[in-house]
Amino acid sequence: MHQYERNGIVVDQCSGCRAVLLDRGELEHLIDTEKWVSNIRPGTPAGPMPGYTAAEPDTAQTMRIKERRTLLQILFGD
Image 1 (spheres, rainbow, N blue to C red):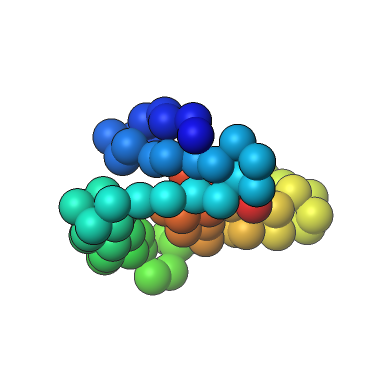
Image 2 (image 1 turned 45 degrees about the horizontal axis):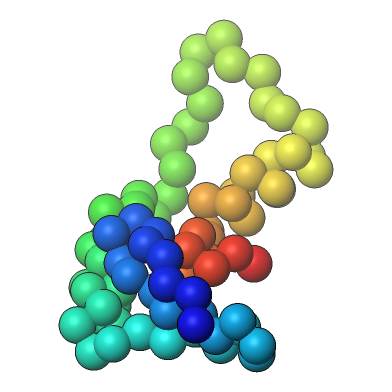
C-alpha cells in the first residue's frame, strides 16, 4: 500500500492492483472541493480582448477540453 497526498487529500493506493482508497473524511473533502470548483467556473467565457488573434481551431478546442477537467481528473489523471 502506497500513501501520498494530492492537493490536500491523502490517497492510499494498492501497489498490486493500483486501486485508489479514500477514507470517509477524505472522500467528503474531495466531494466538497469538487462542488466548490464547479460553482466558481464561469458558464460562458468572455469574448476575446481587443487586439487578440484567435488561436488555431485545434488549439482552441484543446484549451476548452482542458478547462472542463474535473477535480477527480486533475487528481488522478485522465
